Length: 389
Image 1: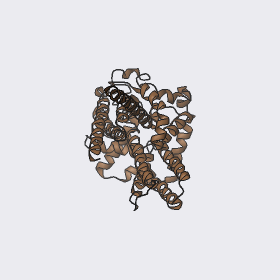
Image 2 (image 1 turned 135 degrees about the vertical axis):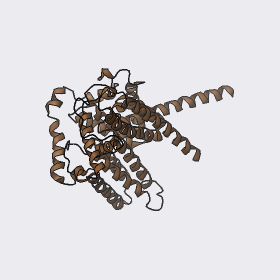
Image 3 (image 1 turned 120 degrees about the horizontal axis):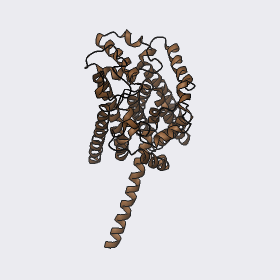
Image 4 (image 1 turned 90 degrees about the horizontal axis):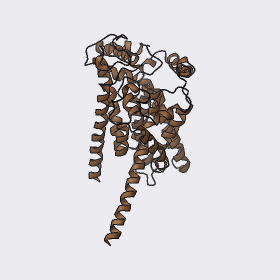
């Protein structure tokens, strides 16, 4: 048993390291993307405020307040060792120009490598769950792109996965046939609550993972009504803790809480009817298309930047593996299905939104391939035994 744990840890470290390397490599090569200047300039402001100890300039700052701020604060921390800059102009960070050719290179790369770290951690965590799934997640090109750029994706991409891992650890112990004595397993639920709040404070859309946890809890509660009161109370605290965590990690809400939160939510609702969304001409199925194609199809100027482009096969195998995922690890199957439904009905069809479904899709693909290889191995072993007998 101890040896198995050591092997799992080593595989997670190796595959996570691979994922981190691929993202750092991309961070130093990818041309500047369209929204990076917005998030980078917000991070520069926070970074200067942190240097000077001007804490009020963090929660009073309302630039880009339609998005929560935790991801931008993470980039700000990464910018602390770099020479300070007040703001980068368009000429410093021009769209589609390779990062190495920009005047803002040192700030862009510093922030991008922070994103790569979160992306690499997500790959390592996935490899802990299933090494093959970790390899798939490490190499999936849409994921590499948006966890190597100064977008809001990388941190909540990691925290949403870790949140479900912690929830699942609590669920296994709480609903076990022979429940262990003591209450230490509730610490897993507390960690899940904290991480859900952090996820929301990074980017709202990743909270679909929280909906998956709630639905899974309801299914388990329907099949086992023992300790009903304590379980319901525990999940109530889970939700309240997530809200509190969201508030703590999203300083922009520390003042004018209701107006800023309502403005932020209304922005995203109204944005679905904006010229940007309507003018994009993307159909309701576009996000599914994103899952089945490498990012170089829509971004041809990125051709040659990725070592391999396995996105189509990951998506196909992941869809085939969904029934097996439901049987083996239902919470992640629920996560995948809720994510797909949300992506189909939400009118804004930007590529980065597909990341809410990709971890569960990779886990489904990894589990399917593992079971297939296991079946082939057992068949070959049985045939060899029969021939030798």
